[in-house]
Image 1 (cartoon, helix red, strand yellow):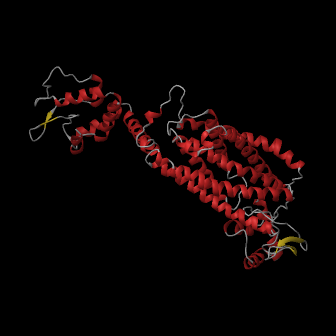
Image 2 (cartoon, one colour):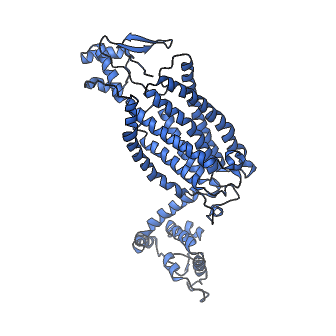
Image 3 (cartoon, rainbow, N blue to C red):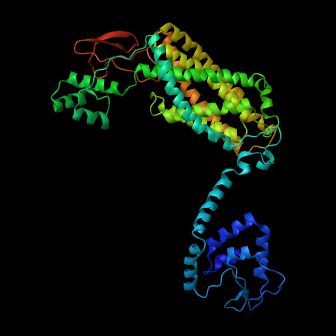
Length: 488
């Protein structure tokens, strides 16, 4: 029959493919009966066995008609009897009318169904000896489902609302009590020539460019330098915004870390990593694991939604990669039932993030000794958790142990690939952290290596704080093209 579809110019191939597939899915018995009805035709188009009746519903769906004789004289079972190609075209035009436009909808449905079948193909997600049918919920056993993650979208929106309330009602009064205030900023004078250069060419013009712009604007070089300095500061977030953002993240990471300890302290895989794969993938989802995953994913999703409005640092691109890699890793580990190792990964990350955000808070409050002490502890915890425990315990657990329990498959390689991406980001951030530790130990730590810090907006003849080539702080008469201080 498929060959007849392909070689006949009068057969609506795609239409009947859709109908056949629909019948195959809905009623295998009726489909077989219809096929026998077509085959049991004599040369006159009559059924040779009157006892075989084609089901009426199937006949209507397939437009089954008696057999016809081909030009060669052989009996050819046909699905539609078109006298000519013109009649075929007319019949094709009538099909949508008969089916009220359902043919196109059925085709879309088939395409979506095919994509879904490939996406959720058992061999992508599960070891070779298992299928999704083996992970059906039973009494007392609940397995992870992709549909469980749909709730992260509304929860992410809830996080945004809670964050807004927290920053206004808690973080702002806390900032005031710690003496965190916004620095007065000078409003930049509108200048079309300088604004066009700022937007289209460079925010940091060289001395030759400054001289050229000063001639175009009939301004002095010092006025042009001051304009660019103030214009750059307009685009930079204020210290109060940074304080509120760091406070929100610190509170969440602290709560998540405490929740992770409560969820894992009594689990055997927290102490013996081989227990992570005991019974995999037939591992029931615990309530504590469910909420740990949902809240973490919702939080990171809210960060993605807010990322264009939050403070942008030098590692902005790396932050985007980190957030999406984290969401992809969490979603894949949930659907593939890598939940036990997923909770361990989240706990490791939250432990150092608490200290980082705490150091930022005290930095913005200008508690330098407290900030420096916390930062040193953070650097040590980051190196231990992200560059020692994560690769040599967690990735070793996901890379070496699984083949002892099942043959490697796509999900095994993909999951480890995402973990390696996170490890590369850890190495990048460790480099920045170690640079800051080096400057701290040698007494020249004056800024966050990732921050784009505000410049002093001093007037003519006033002094501003800068660093010389040796990293020592000094006062200068401050209106150079790159003048201004990078505040601690």
